[in-house]
Image (cartoon, rainbow, N blue to C red):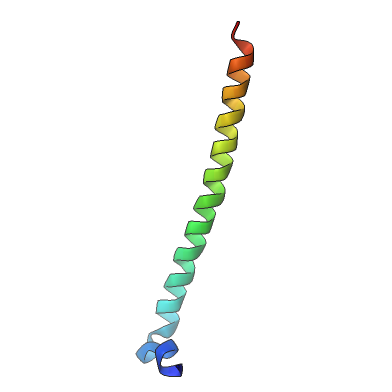
Length: 51
């Protein structure tokens, strides 16, 4: 198991890359949720302002 995690001396690079990719995906999901909320709020406001 230790050999797998160490990955021939490149373990920090490999696992760090996975970590950065997971962080980027998580941040994108948070940003997407916020953009959706903003778009829905704008649509509600536009719908109420129209006669």
